[in-house]
Image (cartoon, rainbow, N blue to C red):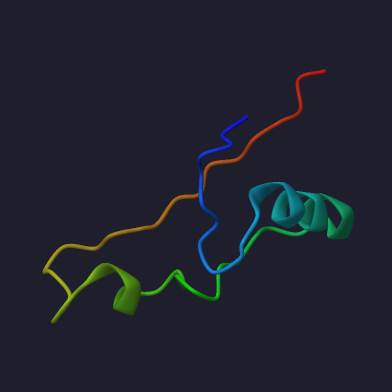
Length: 60
């Protein structure tokens, strides 16, 4: 599909997705954790942010 895409740190979407589907779990990226340190450079802003995750479904 996207042959020009370069995997980040050897993370291949199709393999990651297959593993998550097989284990019936959500993907958690160790390289980009879902915490404040991934969102802010110095300190948290005064407002509360909530990270949302999108999902895909097979359309066969």
